[in-house]
Image (tube, rainbow, N blue to C red):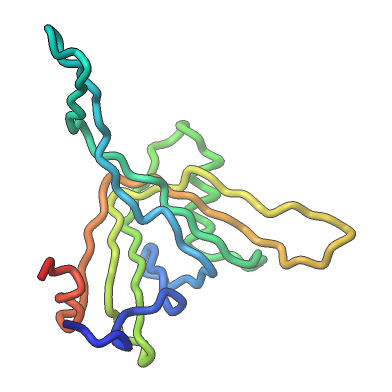
Length: 159
């Protein structure tokens, strides 16, 4: 059993894209869901439905941060992909989200394969409020893998 103070916290993480560490305030979309197909049972017992698994679906990976005006490898890739549309082949990349401990060591890592940007947006601009302007990047990907520090392996055990 892991002591309660050993559970990872979600506020210390890093993002690696195209070999470049990038800071974001929020990461969401780390999710996989198996779709279901409902099949009605025929005959005398037609009051039941079977829920059969079909394919797995991923949510898009969504990254949010304060608007940064300087150029980066990540933003150049996003702008190029989104502006070119399908005029040139989409270049996919591996994107990693690493959850860090208090000493900055990686505790868990999610690697997203064949990722590419599908959306860029900026928060609303309003003159009557002094909010920080946020930018949001959204990526589609084929699949993701999870790896963890061996000391946290028992977080995923069923015992």
